[in-house]
Length: 256
Image 1 (cartoon, rainbow, N blue to C red):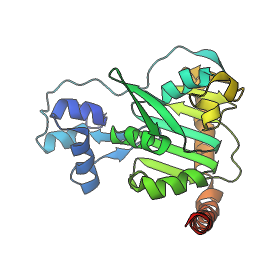
Image 2: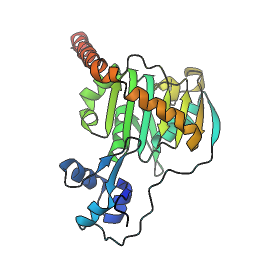
Image 3: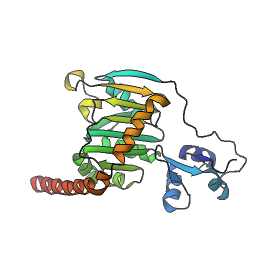
Image 4: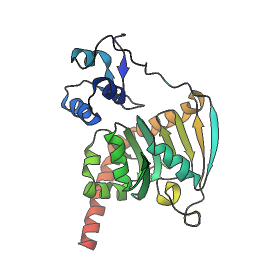
């Protein structure tokens, strides 16, 4: 087995018999050495699992390679943003990257194993990170979402697999699913854009779904540029935190 072989958390769970939560606990404690790949989730060196006697060295596992998907484009209009874009959000396996102007904490309907469940968006993101998905969101106006999560779902903001950054200049709308498919269009993360509203109560939205290594290159590079904007890391985040405190004080003063 090559020394530089890495596997994901789901494959680790399958091979070792550990639950996903047990794997994350081992990672966060430092017992299980892992690396957070910039374009996916946690990556665990195969040899580390062998050294911990969690799997055998001769174990056969599939190589982690970039999927070879044929280049193609699909047009997305109006309510298709719920049936296609949000569906892709709910089905990610390793990584969800989102750049949006607005981030609202609306209710979403999630279907899994034949059952339907209604969740607030922060709880939906929590369900993703609990199964090992690395969620990155960069947004111009994250205040309402941030304050709701701070009050009602603080464990999401504290989870290392969930990262939220404020970029006061970001107006692009890009969703990237497992680095294999991207949505580029007009939709923000709001109920009227990607939520399950009726056609008469939702926005008219338009966008494109892109698949394939060549088509994915530009949105991936653009997201990384905005995500790693030094202006965000040095100053915008502090202004975001200050603004959030001001809003928190205003809300508590208004509603007790």
